[in-house]
Image (tube, rainbow, N blue to C red; front, side, top):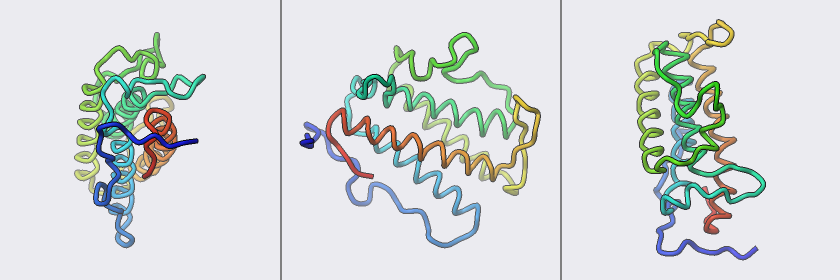
Length: 181
């Protein structure tokens, strides 16, 4: 396959665009740095494209798009950190019982607004983690009523981003040929 360079867009994965997580340090530092590295990787996959291209479902028959992934990850950030762990009574983002797949399927909103919502949820999650005195603190999984530790949430979120970064990598390559990170 011939790689088609993005037209009139700077490649976001140039040197220095993303700091490597530290190779030493404590558990909290390692987990939060890895999660932020994964978040930044995802953000770079969405950088440099016109908003309309973020909504392209570029890998048929899959309905995945970068816009849908942004919406999904914003909802996941809110669900785990704010609702499950911090116990905040908030509406779910891009989800309802009547339309559970709206994060991926209802792409009528503005991709820039979805990115802003995702960034805001990431910022709020960072605040919640920073304020927690221990990774052993627990929230409650609403569906089961079982406790879940902040440590487990961080590990789960790293896995969530790693999985979706693979999807984002393939989508970005199909959209404009850009690869890397």
